[in-house]
Image (tube, rainbow, N blue to C red; front, side, top):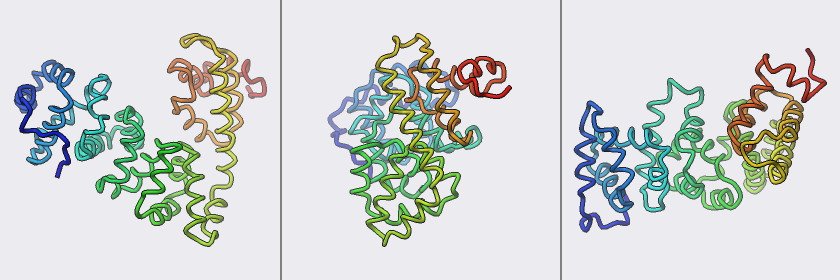
Length: 307
């Protein structure tokens, strides 16, 4: 059942009525009208409409609804509606599943694409709620791990305290392919610390030690990554205003990234938007590191680079 906190019988469904009619149009002729309704619909009516679609198992309209929500995901009002505390998990589950069905052939890693590019605006509390309470999400172990990389600090603590099958959840992580596990850990090194800590609580310590040895080289890389992130944030505080190129930051980022042993790790860090002041800085660092046309600039920033 869709757990709505709103009494849908007391709501005037004028927007919902027209939205349902427009979603039923298979020719896509009413895209602007749908956008206008979604930009102006109240949270109460949005929730009631979502719940009605789910409760009535109207797969065709729900598919169209998901399509337009993702299409308009960059609109602040859509983000606000989806991130609202009263928006039911069932709607978010259907959105995520719809995202998988439409990105499997387009994205190298569908889970990463969905989390980072489609639902990038989901607040940590919403993600934590999905991880703890969604049976759909919990059945997909890989998706659960990737969602978990979006949590930090208190949200990670709460998850590990409230996760019912935590021991099994952590043991499954130890069993996944090493490259996949490394990628997940590099997305959020803090997650690795929590897993090791709880492995020590569950087991004699042998599994935790084995787990640590398994990723020993990666732990060293993670410590370097932490330092890069900390220093980068300090440089940001004393940097020029956003939009201006800060050579000190660029030099630091290139110098530190080149210290990492594996290009895979460098490539991953270049995807971390929080490491950069803005998109322009992110693109510039990537081009200097990997585009041959920027080789002279790379040598200027880092003279030890070979011709």
